[in-house]
Image (cartoon, rainbow, N blue to C red; front, side, top):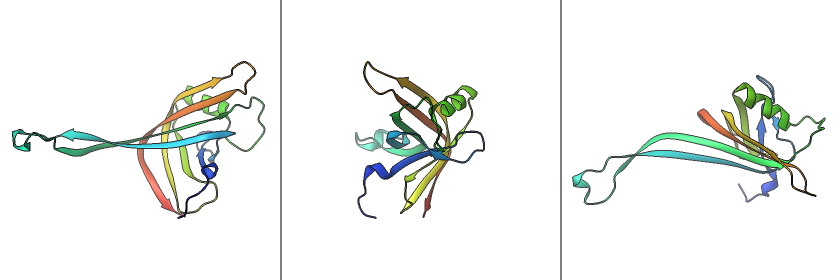
Length: 141
């Protein structure tokens, strides 16, 4: 796979329970963060160096973009994310290139943060964070 334009990297989220995933409306930045916890297994035999084992894995996603209070598009709107956060329902997502090349990453999570803000003479914006639950799936396309 060649280097690509970051504009092509998108996050699709289910706008309702069991609904089809759609691209987050007017997103400007998206990111996926994966982590592995470590378990310290150092002993007196470690010669002063730390020995570790891999522990639980975790992941989170974040996105931000421009707010649209009167959206009529097929994309996932911020108010739909608010409804899912308020209902504490699981969202499904796909993190991938807008034109399938290489692979997609899919999974589920909870919206743990949603912010809408607007400064004086500035475009209103949103940001959201999804904390993952369960496993991630990487699929070649």
